[in-house]
Amino acid sequence: QVRLVESGGGLVQAGGSLRLSCAASGSILSINAMGWYRQAPGKQRELVATITSGSSTNYADSVKGRFTISRDNAKNTVYLQMNSLKPEDTAVYYCNARITTAQTGGFMRNDYWGQGTQVTVSS
Image (cartoon, rainbow, N blue to C red; front, side):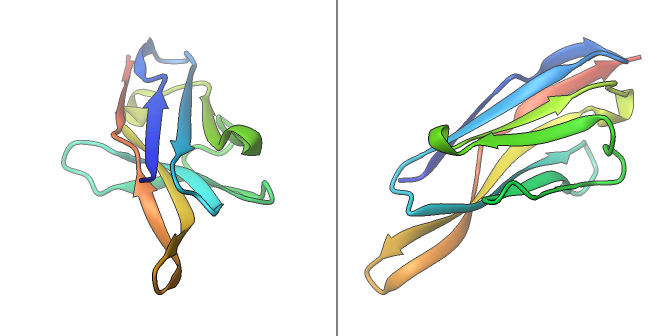
């Protein structure tokens, strides 16, 4: 029943900015962490940024100082503010949430994924 809905992708010129949003909904007991990943054609999926329930953040070295991850716990929403974008940031960006749900055998923690949103940065 858990669903992640993303928005905010698009096409920008190098040096521009975009703000991605991802809202989680469904039978959620708790959200342990949320994050953003990206995958470029021919590349493996890589972690961009994560944020815990206590708002502790972690960033890939390639985006430190340019991207900011934040969350609104009341809305179960995570954001990624992307500034000073570079062509090498071009990728499909996926929202991820590590969510605990109630199962017949007990609690279960799983990763859930959004549908992905295209970010293209032109030279």
